Image (cartoon, rainbow, N blue to C red; front, side, top):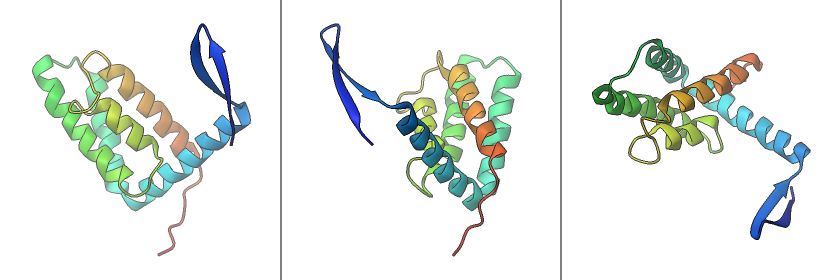
Length: 128
């Protein structure tokens, strides 16, 4: 994998090829599949909590405990292996890290979209 360094409007930017981006995406989804297979209950509970969060308006006093609940499921899933969709979402949703009420719905929708891609992949068989 290689990055091309460029100057854009006086700022340094790193460019990655489309094939490298696709390889990273595939690797991330495979790591995420391992986590899903290792913790199916946490995965189901996460999906359920995300749908509940989107099904009604969230009052500000409900945001923090709901975000922490979702972050807990994400933490359980990303501790299995590195480089998962769950790790990145954990940082974005957890109110003690980067999570914010203004971005909550957007982050949940993005995570659900990633989980749909994960669900379309064939299941992994874990070898112990």
